[in-house]
Amino acid sequence: MNQKKEPFSDPRWNDTSKPKIIGYREIPPEEQVKYKEQLNNFLRKSGVIKKDYD
Image (cartoon, rainbow, N blue to C red):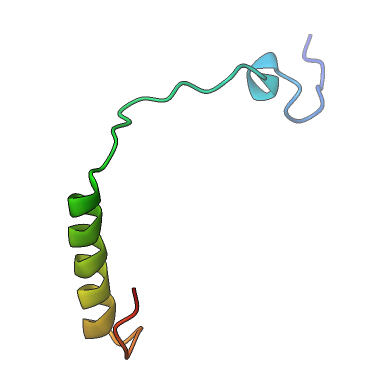
């Protein structure tokens, strides 16, 4: 027999286990500066920002 269940009543939707962190690494300060500069250049070229913000 097919019984109707409430939506999201299956245990997989109610899993409360902690998430696993995968692929995390610390980004050195000099790389952070480089990436921030790349982002600012991209935002300036696309017209999102007009001034150089840090």
